[in-house]
Length: 106
Image 1: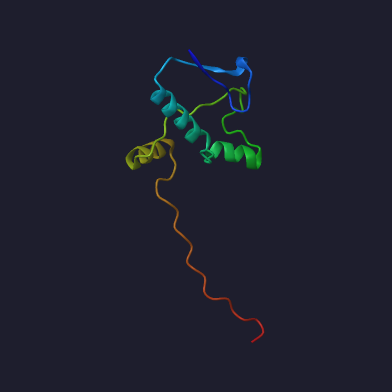
Image 2: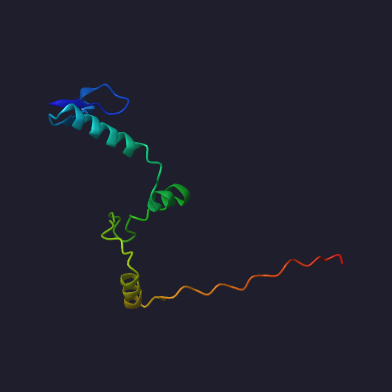
């Protein structure tokens, strides 16, 4: 059994056991892990927590943790859910553009 040590550590207790595999499989797995670590993207919930100290996954009633069950992206599915909840399904109309600013000293 091969061991992959956690980043920045040398203790065996923090090592993750890898199944016995060929050199190519191990190399591919390490490269995939390195790509995953370098991803700079942060999800919306983490951004809200960092910016406003709001944990959107904390239940206000019981203090438990919420979880995402599904991402609905199909327009028909989104419209159906909004109609069921009694929420507007059409976007709000934009205000008309303002004209150029007037010069007050003229």
